[in-house]
Length: 466
Ligand code: HEM
Image (cartoon, rainbow, N blue to C red; front, side):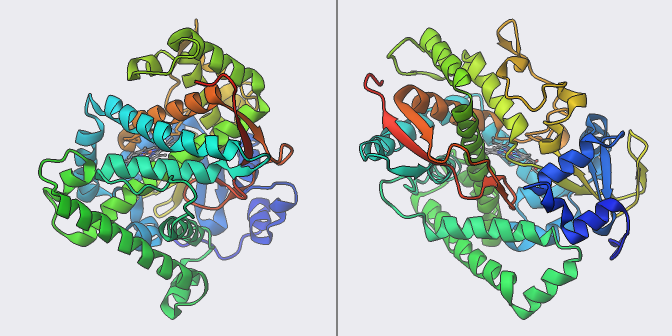
């Protein structure tokens, strides 16, 4: 099945002429509008040969019931192949099973959450807070929180996955060439998937021109870092270490494969956590009542003017947990995710799916569906996740923010420890105000949601801080 080059239906015309952008700032908002108005909560973009769904029954069908019929597929792995290689995000079958098993052993350890807690607390106390305290002393100095959170999560994922400390959050360091290249490669790879025909980027790659030339250069820099990470881990010794990379190095000796594994875990752990924190702080700045409720809960559980001391206390913060889930409902870090159909099929809602069709489920749109969340679905209300004050887990196919089914995210607990710890420390210690309060976020295209222009804030340390 190839996409049709031309189609005169209203949706395809709006897509081809970009007329959707007259009314909507982001492509995701346009898709959301279409999905909210579709009786089946499913739409088709014929020129992309893409079916997009926000119907939880279809999502369960794709991710669980007929998992084998909806792999990532060859078109997807070709698009992301230069960047992600054979890393876990880009493979199916045995390669996927092997990496998932190895990663589950590491990420599923009972002690994992308290180990993450210790790494994160160290990074917060020794880097994040000193950085913000020093910036807070300079009157009206604007800081990009998105950039700070990316550096923070990069340090954490490297320490956790590779047992190495890149010190990205050290004061006054410019964003490394590597991080810039990583963002560029993620954006340009995602843009490949948005072209109507893969021939466009393939020809550009062959001729080494334009965006493909830039992508090649970015990947070269990323490869250098990945090599360095592997070399350092080798030099330090990996047999006794219990980080993720050491686990893989004990079994895999193909350096390119190890490189792919390193890149995938960086992608998994850095951008998603940074994206969650960025949108959470944006929402809190617009909802001071939620910020107050978080601080009151913290004072009750941890004690006024006392610092969090262990992972158990973090677990008791039910309102904070609910507020983070609510934030990710409206701003999921992975806004949509695609698979490819292997054999002709029919979705739960009756949509016929031809072999070779790209099938996308859309967490961003799903978080904004009245049919799932009710008439107040566009409001930021952490209470919707609480029953008698205790967090209530929704059906994951209604809320596939961490995906769901057989390929559900393996780093969810780790991510939540990170996000909660940072939110708590910063909210209790600093006054944080948006530098551009009336600015509505606009997303940059990429594999993970990022605010184009970042999140400029002004921070000030509280007088009676912790
Ligand atoms: C708030 C933060 C996070 C969110 C929202 C998130 C979301 C997701 C999503 C949507 C997927 C499916 C992607 C796909 O198949 O294309 C995924 C997969 C995965 N995530 Fe996360 N993730 C987060 C943090 C993390 C962290 C910190 C790690 C730790 C290393 C991690 C590890 C993984 C892995 C290994 C997979 C692949 C699972 C598989 O294919 O079997 N994630 N995540």
